[in-house]
Image: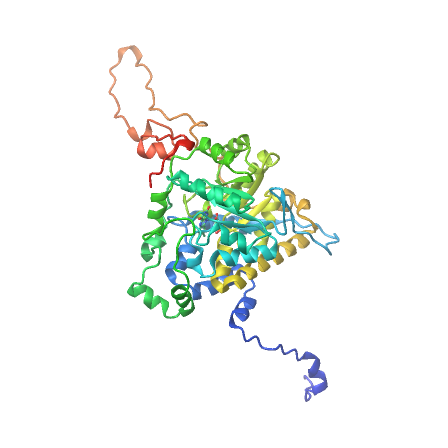
Length: 474
Ligand SMILES: Cc1cc2nc3c(=O)[nH]c(=O)nc-3n(C[C@H](O)[C@H](O)[C@H](O)COP(=O)(O)O)c2cc1C
């Protein structure tokens, strides 16, 4: 039988740990978020559906993105015990400059549409955390304003090459003059991926005020008040646009850009050049031959080619083969600091976060981005300590096993014209002793006339322009 007694105040006093209440709702909300998934849940409640879906969504059936996340979940860490991990260092040099964490903020377009503080919030938070901030060509804050927000930190400019090459290169020039130290050239958008959520939502730039959007706005007043009472949404470096994102991309982007153009772009830029969107080893090797400073294994967060290779799966081989000659970076699917640590262990020098940053932004503006960086940083540091390492240099492939659920059944073939000869129709053997031959119907689909390069395969008329002589067409 349990003996009961009246509780004594002197016994209860040490247990009473009442905190002073937090009256700032934003701070309270953000402090309660312990993971990026928690920030995502807050973001979803506070952002109109079309803007949230634009951020969260990927291309077609969104298989690339879910596989990338699955690949991170399907790892096994191998810790070492009895190491002194009282101190841990999460920084090192990336592209010749220091970073406090092995991750930075990926370039994202239309950022002020997700939350009005947009790129300035990202640049401020990155500056405070000592990590790079990347501004997109499709950003909604100017190059100069980002520089002013992050004057002594590291700013990277992400280039999309437009049909109007002079205008693209004018942006590159402005970024160089503003002191951006790295040019990220994104190469996985010859045409826009099919973002079906945007089509279904009737999503346009700027967001249209339809009956549906007004009804959806009712429980999200803060977003709409911000949207309607701040500077109208406009591209910092583009003319105004009115229409869908996919139409914008297809109108502006130059689908003829090739390795030769890349070499030319590289020659125009005084700083470091990283090529973003690399998806096989052969292309990585060609880029090394071109002398780029880094490559980013990425499938654009699953927003372009659906069922593209999982960057995290490409990583070990690419890092092994080209990592000594160029820096290998990685993005797509990162939702935790453990994903980042696993990537570094398998050879990545750096990683970038897209949605993880935007979820924080939508959940609480600049303070929300701070919270994203804080959550990831703590996870990086804790994972390293639990693995028994003090520094990024100590991480190695022995710390991670990629479990086999999503591994390719055979080594991937390379979809590049140079590596694979164009397929020909099967040649029939000569008939034996004049036996009659009935010709099989020609299957044209199996006998393409030209290489598999998208621009030529689709149009049949490759357009080759010398980069320097390009004239505006848009
Ligand atoms: C809403 C959104 C907009 C993006 N805009 C751009 C862009 O303008 N330029 C670019 O190179 N990549 C863009 N990306 C891709 C990111 O730079 C990055 O590759 C991707 O988000 C990484 O995957 P994650 O979101 O799973 O972290 C965008 C991604 C998102 C989610």
